[in-house]
Image 1 (cartoon, rainbow, N blue to C red):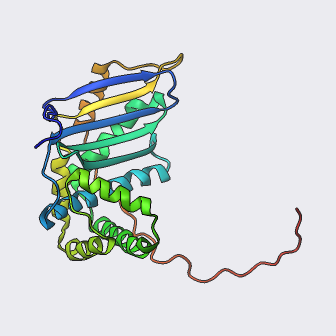
Image 2 (image 1 turned 120 degrees about the horizontal axis):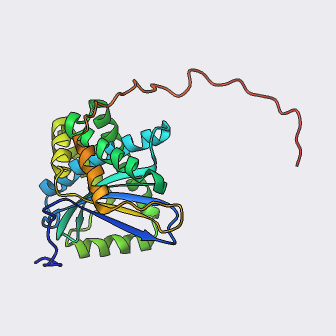
Image 3 (image 1 turned 180 degrees about the vertical axis):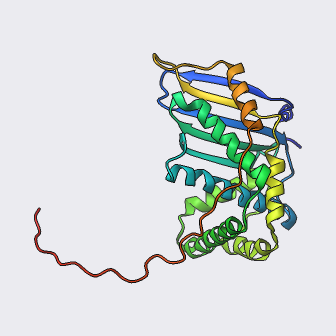
Length: 260
């Protein structure tokens, strides 16, 4: 039985602009509300969410790389796909930056999602994502024996609210070990392509309400988003990546003077 019977999926594009005198930065968000799905109680369902986790991990890595390279208009950006109390699945992308750059941030949010839809991911990205996810699961196994009781209480509360079983870190690692090798590049790409299909997103701009800040009209926000989806995007250009940190250890220095 749904928790929120009136919660309905989005069926068309829309735009919203919210201002607040106390805000200092600007948040740009594109959100799509999709039909809900039942609680995750089977391996098949768990695997489906793992495929989403891999796709969003790779996309978020691309957003971080743009920031690291100094070519992003935003300070940070991310995508996610998750359940909203099991009454809906929310596909979301958001960015934070300067109010004057809202249109650039929206462009770049859409561009990266569209790049995934048009060109997919690479084998190297898939390998990195699987390695990182498994590494996190292994770390959870090592740290679980010394974790605070509060953590387990919140974990159990969350599972009860979601109507899902509580699993130990080792049980989750066992699932990762079993399922990660079965997930291929085409499946991850197709899943993200479907989750972020255009046409029903809500584009939300949150910015300060103060002198010197130009607040865009809603139809202007929607026009920027629609144009961004039609822009041609090129495949991602990947470097070979470092194979080792240092070729040799550096020569030690000598302390010649100390002062406090």
